[in-house]
Image 1: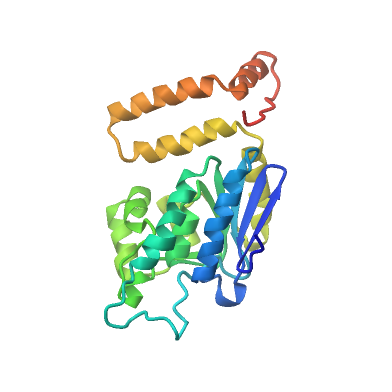
Image 2: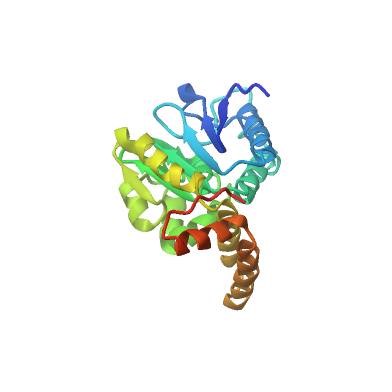
Length: 263
């Protein structure tokens, strides 16, 4: 499929998905959302995939939903603002969570609204020092969506999550890192270098173990300690039957670096 609003590159087991509406600060419209859903299907079809890198073109990662179209019925009586969630955003967030490979996001500039949540779905988020995160929904009289009310309290706690969602203020990258919202902050000209460093580790790591870790953390946020311990036990059995575990043991005994194949 030829994409117009995004770019998808697949090279040596690494998928790079880029939001590509820089003139609109990568704001989401329906064509872009449809393309993102299709891209995720394409990504899942690649059985040798080991990593997804998520980026935004231009001076910002994403300004959120595109409300600029005068032809939209938004704001009129009877308008169902939740319909677009059901059709596009919710499946998108669920598919991102369910991907069988790690997700690494590199963000810059505005990371706003739905764009904020798309970035935070990633397992590891690296931001530039000029980045800011913002839950802008209240400025349009809406409630936070795209999993905001599930994920943000789990990442930064109830007090900060509520303030972020109800005040709609900019959260600078350094503050986001201090809160535990993201992993790292680098200077603007160092973002790609830092992403390459992390991507190299993830793309050459034990992919199946990463898949189990991603799924385990998500389930662990929703279950009891006892249930989580049982899930870990089952996941460890599965990980222990991979070729990567056998390679890891061999490498340890031979005092060398492991050469994982993702199987």
